[in-house]
Amino acid sequence: MSERPKSETQYKEELKQKIARLKKERNAVIIVHNYQRDEIQEIADILGDSLTLARAAVNTKAKIIVFCGVHFMAESAAILNPGKKVLLPVKEAGCPLADMITVQKLRRKKKEFPDAAVVCYVNSSAEIKAESDVSCTSSNAIEVVRSIENRRIIFVPDKNLGRYVQSQVPEKEIMLWEGFCPTHLRLTEEDVVKAKNKHPEAEFIAHPECRPEVLANAHHICSTGGMFQYAKASKAKEFIVGTESGMLYRLRKENPGKKFYMPTAHLMCANMKLTTLGWVAYSLENLVYEVKVSEEIAGKARKTLERMLSVTQQVQKNTAKSNS
Ligand code: 13P
Image (cartoon, rainbow, N blue to C red; front, side, top):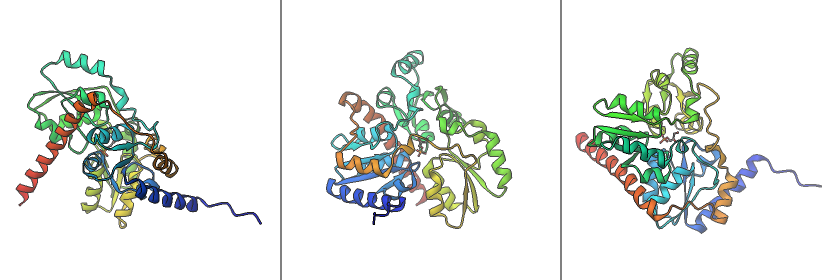
């Protein structure tokens, strides 16, 4: 009698076991962004937003970092860890927002506004980071901008995050770049209004990469990591989630008594979903695809990222002091 074909669950379980074995053999750590597929989130050693993952990459003792996210995230981990091997399981997993700026164009802008500091969102290449004064993520962009002495700031490449930061830091003059996240841009105000009408008790939580008219409807605006904290702490029992749909997995798991809805079915980042268990196993087995940055660029980009990390550390110290 012929063997019964494996079910998808069996197939995934076998891959998970293989990944666990290879991870031990290789002394590797698996770092996963909140937008990844559910089964990738399940194998994470560290799961979080861009800032959490950048900090985790600095603190890990593992020799190999398997970065389940998109290219700029793995690249930042490689920049911050010159002695370690950073692997991106799918080399095509890019970020269209990061590709919306070039070094030449940024240099031109800097020449035009020599008194301005350049703040780059982490969703940018190593070359752009090397040309910038300081990086930021969606969870620390406001503090980073406040920490800068210059009044004028060139904020690249996300115009929506830049505009949101401007609304919170009016004492600065922020020059925006024409970049955007295509996934977040697909969320319209109409989608939000419809979802609110359908779920009148729900709070709308939104990522600052959303359009301004979408953000205007939000109860709370924050990074993906901030959404987990907010959903847990809020008295509300229902939430409309204004960011990539991978968030639902953990929001529902961590808040069994609460309900989470997507305002549209279109909030899926195709690049984030490229990583599968099969690719992670392949990556660990064959040690591919290593993300490498020349030391000339990495050295400059490292300073930009480290400045961001030290601003966050300072803010946390100050908050702890004022709470004690
Ligand atoms: P977070 O830092 O909020 O996780 O955002 C990452 C990102 O790329 C959003 O599109």
